[in-house]
Image 1 (cartoon, rainbow, N blue to C red):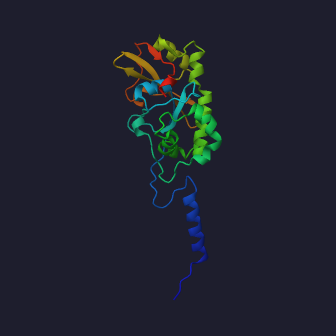
Image 2: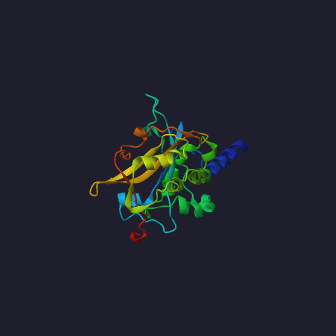
Image 3: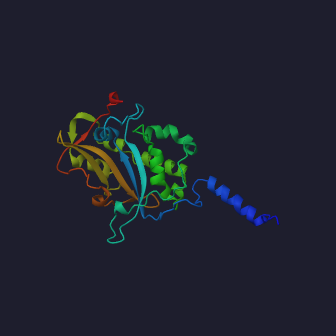
Amino acid sequence: MRKYLLPSAVFFVAVLVYAEQKQGTNVAGSKVKDDHFDFMVFTQQWPETFRLQTGPEVQIPENVTGWTIHGIWPQQKSTLSGLQMKKDAPNFCNSSWHFNQSLIEDLRPQMSLYWPNLIKTNNLWDHEWTKHGTCGASLPAIHGEHNYFAEGLRLNAKYNITEMLASNHIVPDAEKAYSYNDVEGAIRKNVNNMSFVMQCYWDKEAHKQYIFQVMLCLDKQFGLLECDKYFLSEGDLCWTTKTIQYPPFQYAFN
C-alpha cells in the first residue's frame, strides 16, 4: 500500500528545511553549548604591537590609523568565588551559526578601518563570530551576525582609545615612552573611573613593554562595570613600575 505524508508532516519538513537555512536557528545534528553569560568584555588592540608580538604575517592596512577592535566577548562569573574569570567564558556556542559575510556587506567599509583582518591568512570576523558572537544570542542587541558587528563598531566609536590617549598628549612615538600612570589615567577618566584591563607585550631583548590591548567590562545594557584584571588578563598585564612604549605603525613591513 502506498503511503502519503499527512499535511502536518509536510508542514514540519518545510519548517525544518527553513530552519536549516536561517542563520541562528538550532538544527538537527548541530552542536549547541550553554551560552549563559553574565557580562561582556569589549577588547581593542594596537595593531603595531600585535605585529611586533606576532611577526611578519601581520599586515596593517594603510587605511588603518588607530586602535582596532578585537571583539566582544560574553563572559561568566566564577561559580566558586564570584570573581570574573575568563576561563569560564562560553565559546563556540552553536555550530550551525556559520559566518556569512554577505550579511554584513553594508558594514564592511567601517570594519575595514576599525575591525580589520590583520593576519591575511586568517579571517578575524569569522573567528570572532563563531567563537564569541554565537554566545551572545540571548541579548537582542548582539543577536545575529549583523547586530554583533554593528554593536562592536558602535562601542569602538564610544570608547575611542586613540582619542582618549591623544587628548592627553599620548601619541605613537618610536622613541618616547610614557609612564604607566599617565596612560592608565588617560583611559580611566574616560570610562567613569572604572577599572579596566590594560595589556602589554614585553620585548625580552629590548627590555621594553609595548601597549597592546585595552579590555572594558560591560553589563547587558552596555554600561561599564569594574573589571577584575587579574583573572581577565591571563598574565600579560602592563608592568606598573615600567614605562610604556606606544609604537607608530610600520606600513613598510606589509
